Image (cartoon, rainbow, N blue to C red):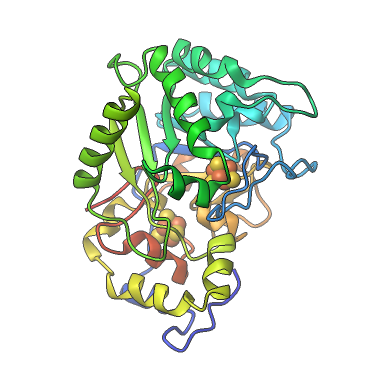
Length: 334
Ligand code: SF4
Ligand code: SF4
């Protein structure tokens, strides 16, 4: 990663929070797959810098790689969950085959869905993503949908004009097929702050979201997960431009909370990029920080047992996961 050149940091400070190296749990249970960086949006805070322009050969997981990843999952019963992320995962042509095959094996499949994709028709290819809600429901896919606020201005400021309206329309179509109402169809929303501050307490914000979205749109969902914006990539650049990077880092460091360590997502999962290269989490992937020792290897060069209890690559951006109530792909930790 690019070094955070700030007087309050020395580039190793997060690592020195611990007497020993941070290690994964004795048994990992989740494979997080970044299936491609292409997205119909280009959000200001996007840590993987997704956008409609990410259509290069390296940007999407190709079909042979999808097959190798699925074979690896099927060969490892300890992998209970496959967590699909992007970009907009649905934009990968092999997405449906992958979901169908993994779901048929009895594993949980989670899809990190930007709900505007459901309203999207790709101008270049003519692909209409209206199929997404029924397909996800048919395969009992757990949906994690980004929704940074219940107020239109805040969402449009972060995600682009019209994003709030398209998100509501997309979410309502998920509710129409049973999401948020049928106990087998879980719909969780993700909040991330619009400005340079920590998320408010998750439980209270969930109550506000449920009230506002139900009253105004008839929208129901299961849980709200709050996620801290990581000081990397687009968000870091924006903080730098606004002269707020140092104060944001100070906020994260001063809110360090040791009780978040056990639940850090890197401790329970392994993350791969579209080529099958290994990272301890999606943030490290965005920073090209490979899982230590895996530099010349791919997912299929390891067993799940070999990826358990591994040393995790950390740096100062990790303060984004340990601040306050903590932050992970599943929301607050403490
Ligand atoms: S919807 Fe998600 S993946 Fe797409 S640009 Fe926004 S934050 Fe990135
Ligand atoms: S960014 Fe968070 S999840 Fe990733 S390695 Fe650091 S602490 Fe773990």
